[in-house]
Image 1 (cartoon, rainbow, N blue to C red):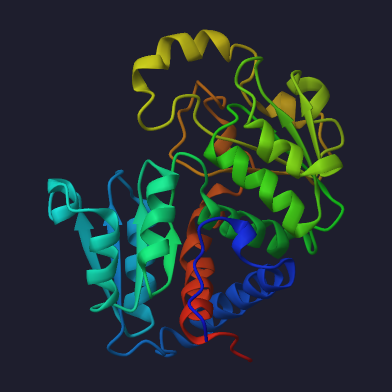
Image 2: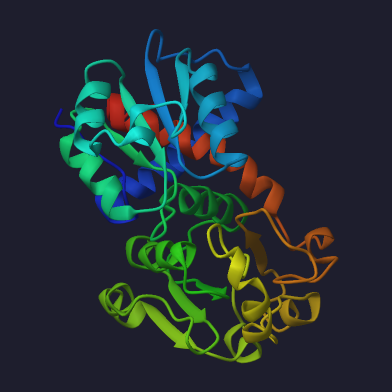
Length: 306
């Protein structure tokens, strides 16, 4: 099988992505029923390169490999020659000779693409400044578990047109749902990503209008990693874009709320929103483990039946 990478949701076909969601649910149910008895990755190694800090990403990938009988190797930029200027392609070629797959959490998406171009083993995007596709696997998995097929449903993104927003736009294309993107003026997503989605995605600037009759509402922090110096200005620019219980009341009665976490209570969400039964963020966070198991399995072994 030719080497497959997962740098954005567009690297897999819609049918392959639907398979991954159902496979992740199967893996999750099997773990609950039988424990970690399915171990297809004996003596397999996943290299995990972190240039950005992480809780959910590191724990979920490391646990996934352990439960699958393999090994995850944590590498920070301080621990590798990348941090001392070794060319990206050289590091990719070296790791390709030693490990079975590479997961990277970094800043530059172009750097990730350069690594993948030189790698002969699968490369997984665990977050760049432009995309966060692994999070969307967990998000769509959660939505599917709780509400069935997401096809033709309506999701609303409220906040910055950032890497999460870009991946939600790609998800609308690939999973065939409608997405309303609601950003303050000046914080819209990249125009090329938006344009490629066509009429699947609508751009709005009023949260109260955007959430009406929505099936799902989601948001993210106002200042992402690397934007901390912009915090005060962003708090002013995002005034009125906080997701509250009252805002969710304008959505459908069975609407769900998602957040990739960590959340800043009192900023992008109200202090108490995560305690609302419509907020399913803990299930969403836990599904990172199962969705990524399905992804790694697919990249290394292909489709698995049963």
